[in-house]
Length: 112
Length: 115
Image (tube, rainbow over all chains, first blue to last red; front, side):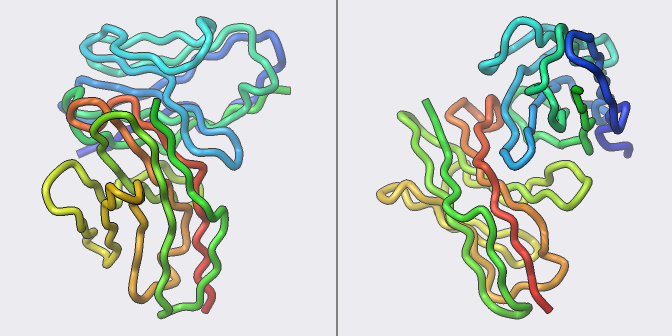
């Protein structure tokens, strides 16, 4: 059984650019959550998608947006990148909204 | 609003010695508590969880944590650590039904096991 995968592994962007991060959920999982983990900090909840609909959002501005596709894979889009957006972005999938989450290895985003 | 405080950012301990990683939480409603472990260059792995029932929960690799409602704590302990336990440990809390939604994480404790 394939676990949660994320691409790319690393990414370097400049301020003002836009970025798309991708997540393939574990087989049979219909719920995906995204987290931002800044250096030296714990992960912070960005939002959750359940069956292609946003189902809960943390304290992040609208320039953080997402999508979930019919196969339950997901994208995280960040517009107008700022230096403080530099972080490890983690995706987690689960078989339902109230079930254990399984994390991917993350995408390391550096904004210069 | 819920929050998690991990009092120690780094904990060095000799191999085979006991260790305690401290975690305190605040939440206005029922809580669900978790410990996650993160090895270098890897994602988070669930170590153990408290959802309901017995306040003492155990993992398969010898860690245990006790939910203490009066002290709002969920400290992680292991009686004898191994080199392979070197990692960063995150305490987390959720107040949503089922426990896994909108999880709030602490800032992490780096456990360094010294040979």
